[in-house]
Amino acid sequence: MKVRLDPEWSLLLEQYKGDHQDRRNQLTHMIGIPMILASLPLAISIVGLPVAVGLFTVGWGFQFAGHAFEGNDPAFFGDRRNLVVGVIWWAQKSGLIELEHAVAA
Image (tube, rainbow, N blue to C red; front, side):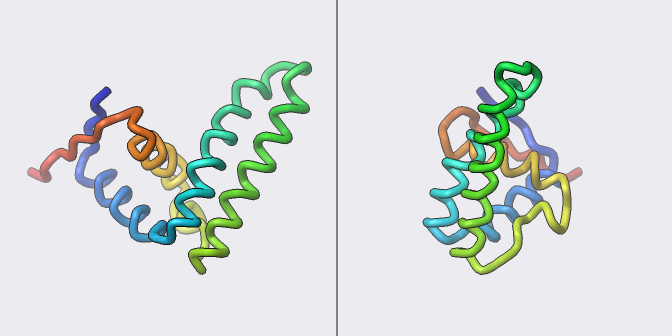
């Protein structure tokens, strides 16, 4: 699936990539981001809530461990939009989406 990013979001993604150069950080994000994403729909039911809490907590643990390797703070500390950018990064890196970058007019 192709996803088109406008210039502003393209810049955010490039900055995100710059903050995630360490291979260990990238690996922890490749594990942590899908865990966090998987936790969200599970959290809406009482039955799934305990599993969701575990996935969410461990997923964020992977994220913060990665930033310990990288030596920087998570990107969303500076801009909350990076929570979405991280998912875009993960989806592209996983081969789930192909990105197109719109040119600024």
